Length: 413
Ligand SMILES: [Zn+2]
Image 1 (cartoon, rainbow, N blue to C red):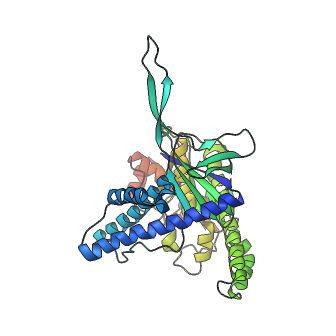
Image 2 (tube, rainbow, N blue to C red):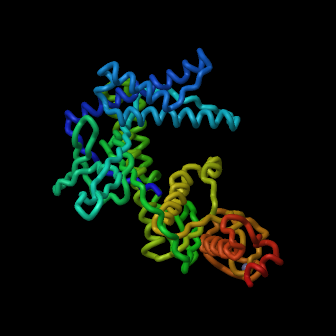
Image 3 (cartoon, rainbow, N blue to C red):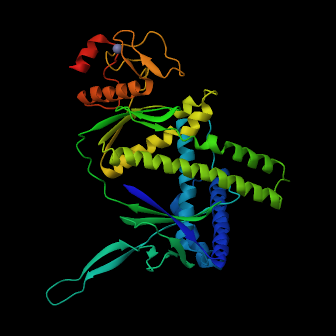
């Protein structure tokens, strides 16, 4: 599996100028390679492969210093990017998608990517008795300095200072330097061996909502921080300021940056909250398996009364993180069908004939008289569904409909 480590980079003014020049060059190369593909097709019905373009680049590098002055690894990565975009376009054409989406010419690119090359490392020198031992490893992109900042090796430039707040693990494969509104960041992609999944001994059902962010099957709740709602006034003020500036004037760019910064702060707050919540579920509360509903937030936001709250809660991101953390730490994450989890009684499995409104927070069963918090009841149902599915050895499908009494018996036995 692949893990990406993100660190803050601190290039100096001169280094930053070099990086901007490199970004411009990569943009030109990307557009040129795209144009080459489309023109070859338009005039000669010839398709160009990634390897053709890499060979073409070699010829260009031999011919002119305009290309050979720049890093070849970065140029090859750019060609790979164009090729990937083109492959996706062709896939969409094959599938007959409504929007084919031909790759666009870029006005600017924001990131520089390069693959790390392998080199031969001598493990043991040749002696009288033993043979020489070598392995092929990738070079470590980071040089440790023992100070606050370590050095990131950038091809053709040298070292750029990075704040490495944690050690990288695994085999580093690819490095990306990216410019955002809040500065430069570097991303190091490492290949890490897969973790063996544990045998689950404790499981927890989780019901996500807009009132409380999540409720577990044990009845514990996590409040919804509503980061967007809290920052909404600030954001609207910045939006208004931007709309009053002359388009593309100096002040317009300043206002645009301020707005982007604030939006980024909200995104970071959300990410931090979700990462901590997910880690807490698996590690602090010690659950081996977490079960949630298989919701489709992209469909749910079509309800215009709830769209903002649902987007702000970012359930999709929460599910992604659960999935990813479980994979990384050898735990389990499963999703069950979400139908009627809040309308069904977790005690007698009967579905309530009257639909519970969203504002009613208490579930009252008409059949067995159970009175329980609405979300807690739903979380219990989710856990039951997963348990039923586990007995059928498939987690992801409906095996037992809770409304069917015959299946209920099988479910509870
Ligand atoms: Zn009941």
